[in-house]
Length: 342
Length: 258
View 1 (cartoon, rainbow over the protein chains, first blue to last red):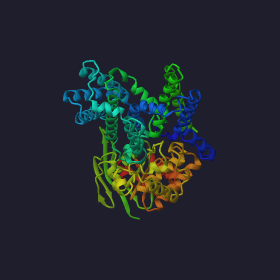
View 2 (view 1 turned 180 degrees about the vertical axis):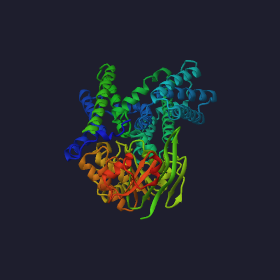
View 3 (view 1 turned 90 degrees about the vertical axis):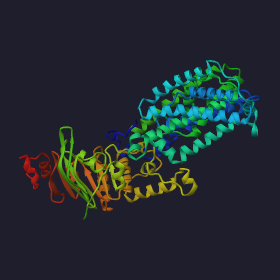
View 4 (view 1 turned 30 degrees about the vertical axis):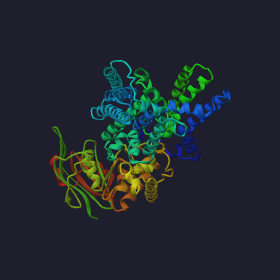
């Protein structure tokens, strides 16, 4: 917790009350602006390197589709991180929700919209249930979020394997697969769903009381408590919503791949947190935007697509992102240190 | 001036330790009442009881002459009592206006408000108004509070309390961490707060500051009020004497200890 320490309180003359100090601070503060620049540079570099294939609608569509599933979870993760929480279990919750939905649809039978709807509700409820468990353990039992979600990461995946007997469920209704191939206005439904989630998430975080309380809790939990915010309740809802979004992502993943892809999501939690942090959300809470998260999630995806088109081993993407992540967090910490001592 | 907040014979003990032994306390509207005492005299405990953070074991707390029961800090705030804690309880990543309305956000009228949409413009304007009318030097309303100086942070915390306090503002050591110049500004601010008509309760260790800022001084020792002095006529020697018990002060309850 970064409570204010009055003992280290600086003298007015030395702080950033001068115009110069203010400008410098604002510049450092706008991490999303930074990352937009990085993203633009990447797009330009790839466009010059592969002028025939990269700057095309097809690439754009691929990037957006690749991002969609993770972005849905990243919006939830933004809220959790802004509230100074942590949730690494979302990849497993995605798998669990997908398996539950697939199993329910399988037992229901049929290829119609009714079956798909039932599957969708199952996925959302299954995700929300894991989120609620996380939320209760963290807010009521006060187990650290890292440990709680590390535990549920293992447990949710194990439960998914138990339900599916360890093999992927491939009986996805046709009505659902057609959703994935249907492209209203040029991009898949997956992208539209992700865009809608990001829009709503961005609105809620920046414009509503729920979002403000999320920032307040992340910035100074004790201050939020004294201001009369029901911190435990809010925390519970944050993790529940986050789980529900992972359930939605499970549904989207099922739609996209027409199978439950049980083993394909072990690193989702880390990828999402990486993207969110790249987008300027602080690991220490209080700061973060959904637009930043969209950009932060786009960077790894663009790198991946670009490297593939340039016939560079796409594994370089992971190396590059690893380095960028560490640099981004270093800058964030530097910023805080400067602000608190300057 | 009328008595806004009064404690009568308040008793509080933690286990076998009697922290407050029938302590009395009065704060008047439009005045700064300093509460002083040595470490362990019971200042913090009394303040916590008056701000709803602790429950008394016995005695009475009265607001405007009527006995009240303050079960929680939220209840105390509803009764018009705001507390500025020593750690200020500000959110460093949020701005001054956002902090001023923390937990009391204004929503837009109509449908947008029912969706939980904040009325940022009005909140900002009202916070700015409060900061200006209190004559504080918080110029940058967009900077996160963590980037402000210690004195400015103190101003934000005090202005926040004043914005919401209908009756009493309790300040716990508001100048403890500040330099000379900033202390002066905060003391001015404390005086201005009282001039708005609310009762200010000021807890401090700094004796000259007490005489400069306060209208009346109430001294606690060993869980009792041992002196209730006019700041205008009191001297530092008197205050220290009352705190340590070296000086015989008029309050007859002192007799028990001698």
